[in-house]
Structure formats: C-alpha cells, structure tokens
Image 1 (cartoon, rainbow, N blue to C red):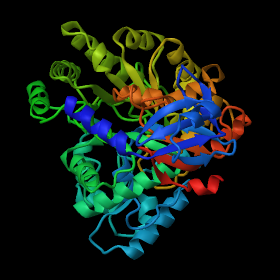
Image 2: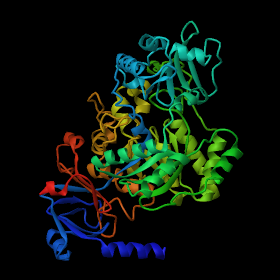
Image 3: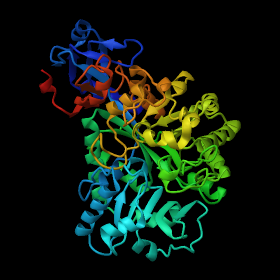
Length: 567
C-alpha cells in the first residue's frame, strides 16, 4: 500500500492545477452540497468551495476555466452495461429500431440481400412488448421475408425460428418440451417458431458469429467514447468471461481507457453443486483486484428469465394475460435456471473466498430464491461487508426489501423497463403486482443502496439503444415514473432529483467499494465530473431527460467536449 501512496503523491506533485469557477457545482458531498468552484490538482479534487476561496488556493500558473454559470455534476456511473456486445451489435452497420413485425421483416430482407447463403439471418433483441402488434412474429412471417433462408429473431431468452431453421434443428410437433423452457405450439400441435428459454437449443445459434480480439478491442473503445459523450465516467460491465477481461486489460495497457470499469465475472451455476463450487475456486482472482481504472467486480449467475418475455420466475403463476408472450398457461411461473442448492453453494463459496456476488433476478420468485441463498451464506459468516447485490430485481415486495436491509444487500436497477415496457406489463401482471414494479421510493426509504443502470446491450444511440443508456433520460424516468405512452405508473414510488443523481453517482461507487475515491466532488477524490447544458436541480421536470454533457472529464483529463467552448 505504501508503494501506491508514493506513486499517487508523485503524480499529484507533478500534475498541473486547474481552477473551475463561476459555476453551480452539485457536489453530492455532504460537507458542501452546492459550490461555486473547485480546484483540480493532477487527477484529484484539491479544494471545493466559493469562487474566492478556490481561486485563492490555486497556484499563480493554474489553468482557469470560467464555467459561465453552468451546472457541474460528479462523473456519472452506469451500474449495468454490456459495452462490447452493444458495439459489436452494429459492427456490420446500424441496427434499426424495430417497433413492428413489418419492420422486423424489412430488416430480414435487407440482411438476406447482404449475407451469404449458409449464414443464419439473425435479428437481435426483438421484444414483443415493444412491437405494436404486442406479439412475436411467427415462423411463417419470417418465411415471408426470407423464403428458404434460415432466420431467427432473438432477445437472449426467447427466439422465433423460421421453418428452415426449425427443420435443420429437427424441432417439430413430436419434439418434447424442454425442462427449462417452452416450445410454443399452435392448436394443431405444430411449432409456431417461438421458443422460450431452452438455452441448450438456442445457445449455439446465438454464438454463431465470432469476432477477433482486434474487433472486440475496437468495439470497447468505441463504446467508452459514446459513454463519455453522455457524461458517463464509470460503469460496471455486468457479464464477462476470460476473453472479455483480456479485452479490457489490452485497452488499459494501451492507455486508451476513458471509462473506469468494474468487470463482473459470469459463471454458469447449473449442473452439479460440487462443480459450481470448483468453478469458483478455480477463478484466479477475486473482487477488488485491479485499480481505479479497471478492477474485478462481482461474481454473477443467471437465476431466471425476463419480464419482457414471460420467463421471469414469479412468486405465483402469471395468470391468463400472457398473450403478448406467445403462450397461454395460467399455471406457469417462469424459468428458474439455477437449482436453489446451487445458488446457496455459490453464495457460500463467494463469501468464503472474498467475492462480492450478484445474480440476474427479474421476477419476485427469483429475488426470494437469491435472498434465501444470501441468508444461508450469512449464517456461516456475515455477508454485509461483501455488499452482495440483486441485479435487476424488478419486483421486490415489502418482505424482500426488509430481508435485503437485514443482510446489507444492494440493488442494481434499470428503470428503462418500467418506462418502455410498463404500458404492456401493467396489463400482464395486474395492479397488485405492478405496485411493486421497481418500487424505488420504498427501497430508498428502507435504507437500501440502489444504483442506477441501463443494461445497455444493443445499438449505439443513447436514447434508442436497447436499453437506452442516456443517464439523464434514465434519471427522468425515476423522478416522473412516466411510461412511453405518457401515463404515470406507480406515482407513489417517484424519487427526488438528488436521490436519482445519487443512484448514478455515489450508489454506483458504493457497489464497487469506491465511494471514498469517486462519486462526489470533494477534496481528495478522483477528478471525474461533467459540465451539463441545463441546471439539473431547477430545470422543468420534463426537461431533465433532454440534458446533455458539454464537457466530460475523467482523471482530470477532458474525454469529451471542449473547455474552450465554455468561455
């Protein structure tokens, strides 16, 4: 530790000073919530306060930047992204926003004209909740677009295969139902093309496109620059294995990293319990290994499916309003991918070895199963210091919130699903369950740490991506609870502007054990901040979503915008 201190002091000693003054600095620092100016020395904030005090503290030769009254926020932190995959999704060209089956067919026709025969025509991230028809296309509608070419739509948990692809995979009326999903069949017992879950059937198709190390590196660099343009200075990548870690390491080795990242290590917790334990024991690092630019984050597994596709694991059956998902099964509760005993073994092993743990849990039943595993680990050794987390956690009821509070468990939440999909999901789940759809007010009032993320997966556009990663757009969603159709769902769960800002700053830093070095503008912390186009605290509420980043600074260095343009 002494060696790192010497390096840090040497860097501060040789770094140039810069004074930013005449601004409205929303610090997120309890010692001075609003300031006029701050002094940066190298890569750290040295002083924060009034114009006169900060200017007096600066050296004679310090650079001066007049903010002209503009608002400054701490660097923003997206707690859930998939930047490499998102950038690679448009490697061959932009993926259009598809809001209808006709649009899906048009995209398939374009792919067919551009793609060699023999390749599966693949349409990523098609959700029936976001199509005007409020259903998935059928195999026959895909056939209409591509004829005898093999084609599929996919969202990672549900896929529609056309007739040619079903034939190659030998999926027909006699194919038995998988134990971890559904092959949807019509009233004549013929497959409609829709398959829910069943990763063993669809996994090879999803992984059919291979990218080189150079392509993955370019994708990551491109996406980090895109994040900088909206004010993001830190993120948590929520799912990588060894190749993904190597991509991050190479970008850092080249000195080209512009977003601080904690990388989550994804493990398959299915199979035998002993194998789950050995898999974790064989990982050659643990949470926290690395530095402020790149570190190992949490250990993660996928517990259930998704609320957008009707495979999230619920506390009780979905009921009869599931037509949007392509099936009618009043007794169906969703998919539990990981046996409870495996989840418990994972939590115990993670705690014993020093890992932080999280898990993809979208349904209430999955949240309960994960908290049960966390409680079992806590009985062996308290897990509070490990900062175990629930990822997504769309339907935590009052009991789940109380259990999480007792354990010191945090939540990594994505309001985009509430905004974009709430208009349809409101009818699927009904009023009693919907009142617990991302209950942020209840969670914060209970004292939980709740971080804000996007689950950005597909497309580069910050507002049209799946899911949209523009942080001010997301903050606006939590503040207003407005859905895409203009209605307000769960108004009692709205939160304040400062609470929303905390979700995208200090809460994200807390998830990575870095709240003492970033997440606020205060002396001694890393100089990450963003100058924005409007006053976040006073602008009319519906204009929050339109705020943009003028200048983004990471580690004291401008990574987006031009400080000269502020003058």
